Length: 324
Picture 1: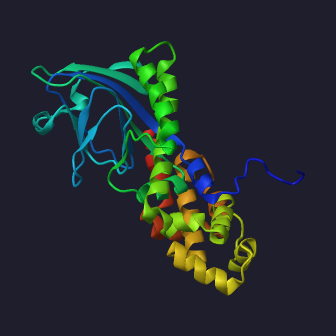
Picture 2: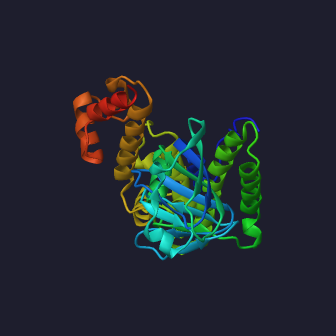
């Protein structure tokens, strides 16, 4: 066992899922009755999720067929689009913004909404949340998702884990005891990961492109090296060696599966890591340039703006302003 790192997964796709750590999260338990409709706003770079604890509701996402959600279903709206949850089609057309309903804040990240819209309709209890994922691997995965992902209440063996977690969320939502909001938020994060894993397993196009490359035995190994250690002075030859391939065969297969050349992907990945570092760490710009493989701040700044569309300084200033 000497020399093995037990925390490094031999599964590059599993490592990408490991990076799905949620930040900037907010969770809401909604107890709705009557002819109710709830409009969720556009939230840039956020992923909304919804699960029905009791009752039923309709979920309407622009450009997608309306879906009915029942207990045991779990829905993701990955790209921050505005959308509507409602008792029926009529209520959906006149939905109330979630911001206009009174919130009882249990904590700074968890609120309860109790709303009776009046009239005939359905009683429903929902657990919803909006989360962000800052790691580049997580963001890249989310960008590949369709506008709506629904894992339904199917009773197949692959869904048993999700059903168990949903049952725990339902119990906590019905009888919110001390610490219950902490349990629900952590379980919700698990549900998001389980839903993404289910989508990858059951969607043919998830077996191609970047996700397919992660699942390729050799190219996946090289991608894992880049993701784990983006600041290494990688060469095509070194990455080909890690994949046990010749340089030419590795370059051709990498480009075929990933859609970018090896060095283009490495440069892009480093800029994404640098972007998130500027948002989360108080790092000296010269050090960040060095980590990203540049000898000067000026060269790093030009490459950063070319890759992200903004300068490193503007990212830092925005982050500082958001914290004041």
